[in-house]
Image (cartoon, rainbow, N blue to C red; front, top):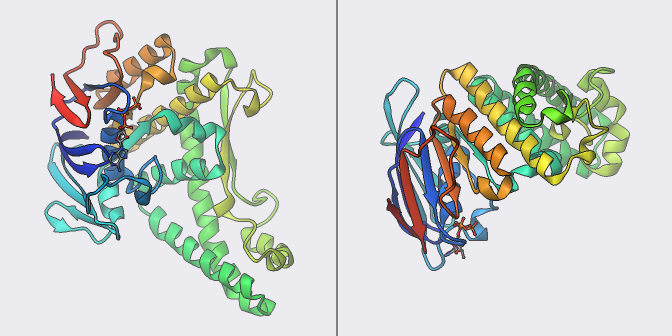
Length: 359
Ligand SMILES: Nc1ncnc2c1ncn2[C@@H]1O[C@H](COP(=O)(O)OP(=O)(O)OP(=O)(O)O)[C@@H](O)[C@H]1O
């Protein structure tokens, strides 16, 4: 996957940025507040349909502007040219794919695979379970065609069941929704468990490169109910009284989580901040590697402000490892970084007060 063009209009401080990245390493430099992260945010928006810096109303659209627009061109894994547009005018997103309106953002995001490591990425390790579920579901969305329909089915059933629980109905009214939720939830959970089992050896190898001193890494899946003891339908039945008292469904795949443990550490809490970041980076890169193994092409890799996140040896290691794969990388930095020996940027860009130029 290779991004060849990205026009950004009215996103944060970027009034108009015409970005023409090269294959391989693209370096984007600029001082604090210049607009580097905004550029990465634009790429991430196309791949995820959401920003890693909050909601649209939190300032994504440039102040005083009625809308923001993105237009992107890229080559897919077979070298075919693709194009997409994304627009937000304060209501909903409007997406276009290859010249036609996309029925939803999902269709666009399915085509453009992006992985991002940015200063907030350590939340993947230190933050709430929603970050880890999102990580897991992104991968399944891209590599498992059956995932999205079952995820939607589960979400719909959960909404219905929660609405009923709030009204405190007769237990019999819950029965069909318990069954529906359980059926979709078991499938969803099996897909997640399978994916994590495939990811684990890749993560073990990647974490071993970055944090060998912590001993072998392991991945543990927490499905959201005691899956080893009962089916989801039984768990819902057993938990019904409690759910009625709470007014929501207290167990199931919407409460799923996963965690990385190291043999040489008593628990996740013993990780230093830097080790959390390196573990998060290992997860992101392992996910990109697993994606490449499944799909035969690397996702676009965005590394925002790597220099402020990691020490130099780890920065070099990360860059060398990603670039050895032939992936396209967008790397931002406040100053021109010294790159690992033998690596050069194929294109260097500079951002200053929202103006992007190629050097
Ligand atoms: N809605 C908005 N309208 C106009 N400007 C905005 C808006 N939201 C944020 N900004 C400005 O856009 C810039 C965003 O910069 P960005 O976070 O991309 O900088 P950066 O180059 O990554 O900086 P740093 O190195 O400090 O992380 C900031 O100057 C900020 O004040």
